[in-house]
Image 1 (tube, rainbow, N blue to C red):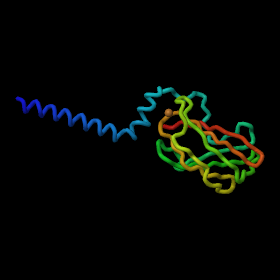
Image 2 (spheres, helix red, strand yellow):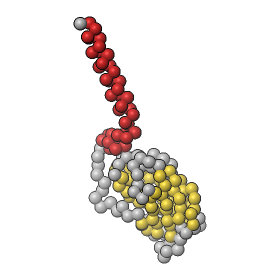
Image 3 (cartoon, helix red, strand yellow):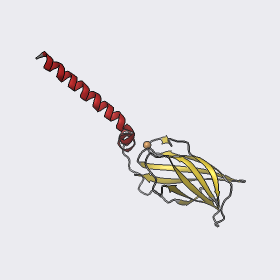
Image 4 (spheres, protein in one colour):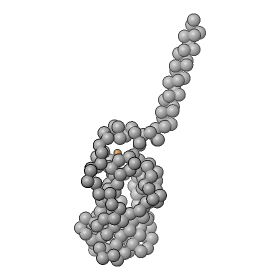
Length: 161
Ligand SMILES: [Cu+2]
């Protein structure tokens, strides 16, 4: 009788430990997709959200577009973007200084990484390294562009699924 009790207790203890270990191991997978959105409230993105990847900058100085590699922005993976900057009349903007900011306005947090423009690729193209979006939902990515005397910023909206 006593032995049976002990073995039940041991079984329960081992089961509990296994559940905890599995939970910890799965955290990087289930965290970004489910837990954080649950904690932060599952607000849907604004309905009139403009998710164009080509926009005119805030003061109209630059026409800016981005593309991601891989083409579909991945969830929770470091990846690169290419930013293309030209003047409104289509001349590529060379050797600008570009800063990257962003975050989730509905969650009140920024980007989990500190992405940098690491290389001017020529023809108005800039390599952005270190992009990562750790959860699904509505994100903003802002670029602050300085080219000679001209300075302007632009904010892109995206929906990570
Ligand atoms: Cu968030």
